[in-house]
Image (cartoon, protein in one colour):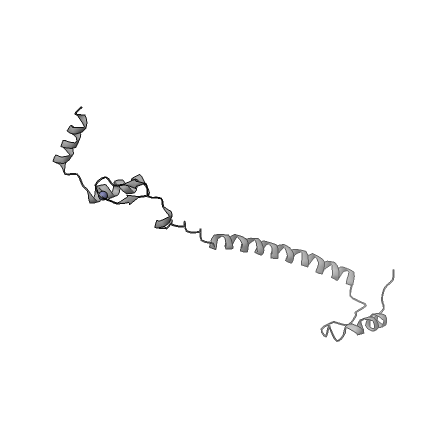
Length: 122
Ligand SMILES: [Zn+2]
């Protein structure tokens, strides 16, 4: 097994001293293989935790996004083919026309009876 002794190690790593000021000196009593394995496993756990948090963030982002409001059509975009028989008003739907008639041209009960009677006459 090719192990570095303290001297070789420090000589080799001296080139990093400026970039890694916190780098501890080599300690021959430390089991670096075991230490690196601990760090490796610790990193695995951390990565799993990071992934879990990322997944939760994605879910939270989805919940935050409000559903897009349905775009209301402009008056000019609606083809008005439903014409009121009693005035000049035009409407885009039968429902709108019926609402207009109900509000603007309410049929008085006596007139209504007359209309029904007329419709049965041949
Ligand atoms: Zn009308």
